[in-house]
Length: 161
Image 1 (cartoon, rainbow, N blue to C red):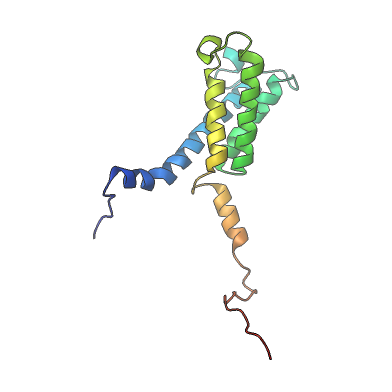
Image 2 (cartoon, rainbow, N blue to C red):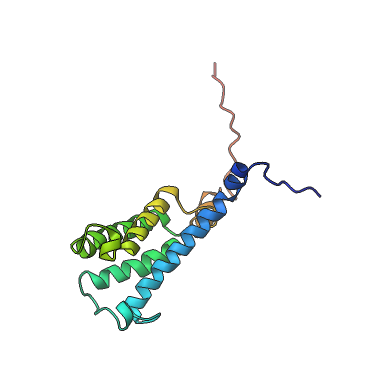
């Protein structure tokens, strides 16, 4: 039995890429969903150290809903690109409407989590879900030809005549 170990660090990095992308997507989605759950349900310490955001309150409740639903979709890898883009946009909105008015830099205005989530979700939206996502299972089954359909042969019929 032989092991196919990468010969170079670059080959090792390329081999690890699918697993790292999947893990990155799952961790970012889970952390974001936890923020939403904390704000909506008061779990995990609640919103801003305790309690919940009042239902329907703009923009906090809607942001928490995006965090919970979008984070869960990204975590599971369902509609990943669209969900990640929505999550990224919500964090950009949060940064510019909540944090930016206090100071220019995220370190000064407390906006580091918003900036990090914004860019992390933008990267996920561009890079996709990785190989271990529910999207892959759903599209693999949807793309499979039905048992009653004949498989294409790939040959083109020649000219008649």
